[in-house]
Length: 227
View: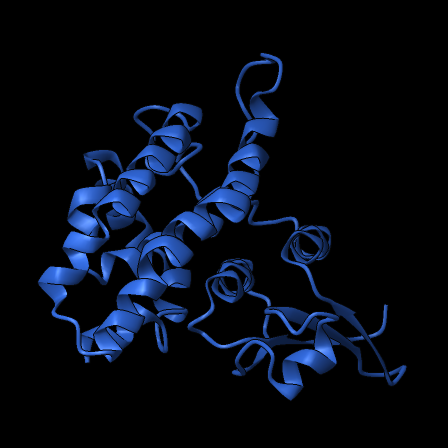
C-alpha cells in the first residue's frame, strides 16, 4: 500500500470538524488542518455545498487525492484504516439493537443536537453579544431554547449506558465525539448550567481528560472565551 497523507479542511471553531479531529487524534493518525470557514473558496473547492469538514486523502506516491466531504463517510474511512483504538460500542450481551444504539445517538447529535444547541442557543447568543445585548437579557431570551436542549439531552441519556464513564462504556465512541463539541460550545456560555444534568457535567469532566480533547481545544469557542 502506498503511503498516504491526510488533510482536514475546517476551522477548529466548527463542531463537526472537531468531531473528526477528535477521531484523528484519538486514533493517532497524523494530519494537517486547513483552518477555513464554511462557504469560503477553500471550503467550496472541497465540499459540494461549501460545508465543513472535508478529509483530503493524498496518495503520496501516486500523486492523486480523494475527498470525503461528509462526516459519516469520513468516520467509516477512519475506522477502516485504523480500527484500533476502537470508537465503537461492543455490548457484552446479544440483546437486539444494542450495538446500533451508539449510531442512533450519532445521528441524533448530528440531526437534532446541532440545530438545538448551535442554531437554537449558541449562535444567537454570540450574535446578540455582538449587537450589544446584555448577557442577562440573552439568557432570559434563550430560556425556551435551553429547555429544548435539556429535552434533547434527556433523549440521549435514555439511550446511553447508565453509570458508565462515557456514553457507551469505559472508552469513548463516535457518539461521544459527535456530542462533545456541541456541549463544549454550550459550556462556554451561561446557558449551560440550566441545560445540563449531573450526568452530562460528569461526562464532560471525563471527556476533558482525553488527550484528543486537549489536542483539539485551540481555536474553539471554549478557548476563545478563556482568553
